[in-house]
Length: 85
Image (cartoon, helix red, strand yellow):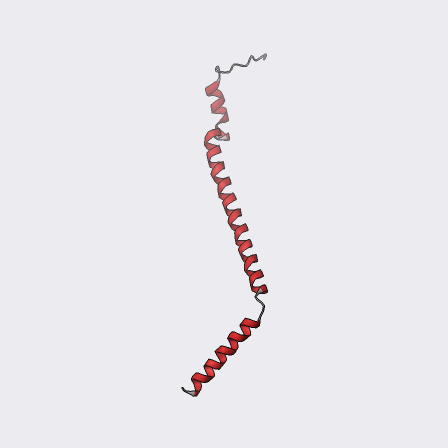
């Protein structure tokens, strides 16, 4: 075995031992926080899309505000309310 191979192997083993001795808690905490932030972003985007989809359906059902006068003219005479004036 060559000298460079033995040196590299020793460095890798030292790095692995150092990593095994370190606490994993900070890394786990960071990972959980990142996952929670992604989940919040996903929920926010889903809510925005659901709201937009609902609004799109509502506009079809209710019609346009700009057409209220035309709609009132079209429905004139079909009202069942007694008007006093």
